[in-house]
Image (cartoon, rainbow, N blue to C red):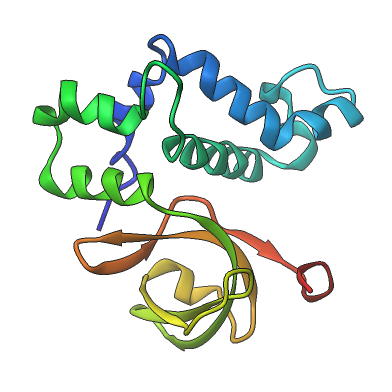
Length: 174
């Protein structure tokens, strides 16, 4: 399983051109409207409104979304990073990055929770059969029929969740 620092090299790579500006555009599309409506001048102050944990979760969702994007004239940041710095990464980290690159954020309904092991996730947007997600920590807080926005990441044939998991109440998720 990926650790909390699995993407640290890729996050540092984000500071390079053209990635930084392109990421800031994605971050703005994710949370810019809320910052404007709440008269918050920049992302760094969002934690004061919604708690730092949730602000960083939103940043992580925007970052993971950016990892799936193709930038004109530059390609994809994951491909670029792995081509130039992949030799510094473990096989597991490279597989996780590649899986994130091909992942999609969606809204899922949770069922069949096996504590400390896994749960089923049914895609409420794209449909299809529920898929088994290997996950330890989320199984301690999720309940059957919870609805969450998340990315399912295929890492060497095993489905795990990405770093951003956003809970949804029943009514707004309908």
